[in-house]
Length: 425
Image 1 (cartoon, rainbow, N blue to C red):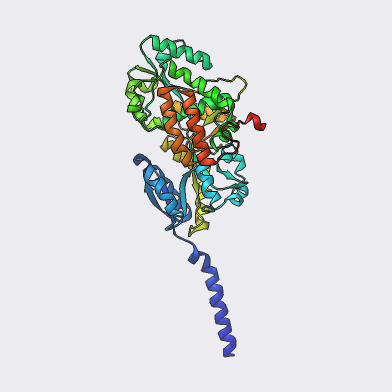
Image 2 (cartoon, rainbow, N blue to C red):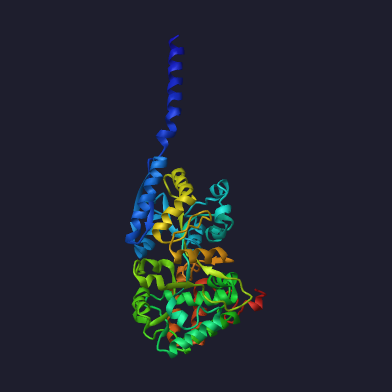
């Protein structure tokens, strides 16, 4: 009898323990790493608090500024690893996927049927058939201008030729047609990105930036030839290498500069509340090849789960949470970005709405030069883009870019190989 009672007691203890096991095993805290500007932290803390109220899981945020964060990510992926990490789509993500440092979330993606909300950005988070991150914010690139000034010179240009003609009229009137601050180098790469996308399309552009096409390809030379027109006609400010990207804005405000090619991160610098803000307009980069669909740059921020994460199920709960349209709408309204979720609600700013219209009609999305290539190639190539704005030397930049391609990616075709020789589009 005693043995039966002891067995019964033991059984009850096991049932009791199993009943509470999910609660005992459920993590009440996850660590999320973030790369933020100082004014963005509050927006994320509001979202993390909402996540806690809904799930009981608290978020400890590990915040670093841009460069410090990028240096720390490879270290975090190996040691003292957060459960969820902020990162960028495209090649920066693929590199970690290839190294096996992050977990695929393909099953979660399929279970939640995310193709319905995120099909337009899926390419940037997919590597060899698996999905590795959830997009939660992106922003548009394009050309900003003063409405009154552009109206004075004939209204928004409809294509590349009319754009060049307007730039010439501005220059004749004593206005610097294009403002750019290239001290940090990367703003110059936007011009190469867009001229290449408008002339040759997204697939060629991505093949080029991943080393699969030689820079001696005739299509690349055509891009540089068009870009050189801006340089040879002195359409850029002559001292561009002395300025950071945002240090040309005062000239723009004073009608001394006609156009700026920038991403909507510039919104944090606009004089909101000032009548001048109402005079800022936005347009897509002009069409060059009339037969080419519009492809746009839309750098996309994502959350990924490291392979060494301690609390994987809780991390997946956060991924499901941050993917929701209502959450993305709230977060991006505060950040000044756009929700990648197609069901998201866009902020009220006219410039944000213009961006949403631009990206919704795009045939496909690139990320930006430095995100769509390997870091080693970016370090060699981007300074050459800034240098080209001064020299306009097609032969020099072509030779140096091809040398960099071979150094980073290896020689796939020989120095003089071209995509046309290989039957590529």
